[in-house]
Length: 221
Image (cartoon, rainbow, N blue to C red):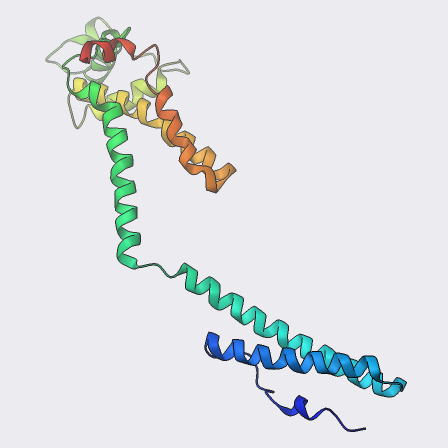
């Protein structure tokens, strides 16, 4: 039994430009339509089996060309100007940094943030940092009693900071980290839960200034 003469045409694998792929696909689609017509008219089982094998081969070639076209379409849509992408990233970073800076600004434009028990905490960590300093004689009246207490992290952190800055700056750094930890933690958890909704973490900026910081905010205003 002789094969359809059209089957000898365009036997190369998919590739090349989109125009070439589209032209090749149209030609194979026409060949497929003719083979399907021959399959319906064939009265011999062997002939129908052979034509069915040709039809499957043509369908496979069409699927390969469609896959190549889809891949080129995706790669074309993903090509963006590098300068535009960099600019968008820079604007996003600057916007985020600006929002975070505004959130902590009230602590840095005043000398003493008027927060509840804040002066007592500063006094405690100052004494702990200078407990054995002969200039203050704190060891004559106080002793360090480290343990699993509620303010252990704050005390250890601010005592360590006082090696590099004074107690007032150390306190403002701690307050700033307390504010920034809320949106950063929200971003982390939202990013882990659903990457596409990461921007929703910006809503947590509303909750950063709560009852404990309201006094400082009203004073700064």
